[in-house]
Length: 126
Image 1 (cartoon, rainbow, N blue to C red):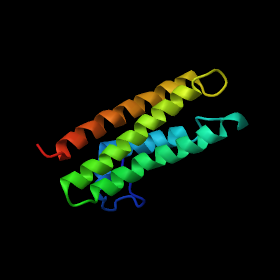
Image 2 (cartoon, rainbow, N blue to C red):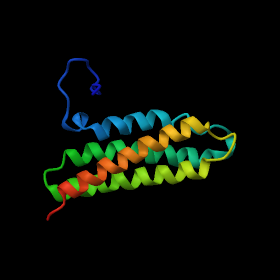
Image 3 (tube, rainbow, N blue to C red):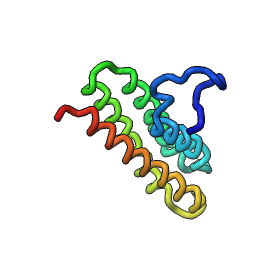
C-alpha cells in the first residue's frame, strides 16, 4: 500500500492505514478532471464536494471512540460515494467525459462502497 502521509517515513494516522481511504484519495484525484466544459458547473461542484466528503468522513469516523460513531461516519462516506456514482451516471454522455475515465472512476467507487459497507457492518452492534 502506498503511503499517504505528507512526510515520507513519518508515522501514519489510523485513517491513512485504511485501503478505503487510499482508494478514496485515488477517486478524488480522478474526479477533479472528470467534468469539463461550462455546462456542467453545478455537477462539477457537487462531484467535488461529494468526493471530498468520502475521504473526510472516513478520516473523521476513524477518529471516533465508539463503534456506533465510526459506523455513522462510514455510512455517510458510503452515501457520498453513492452520490458520486449518480453524478457519473448523469455525466455519462459523449463529450463530457472519456469512457475509459468513467469506467475507471466507477470501479474505484464500487470498491469504496464495498469496503465502507463492510466497515459499517463491522462497527455496528450485533
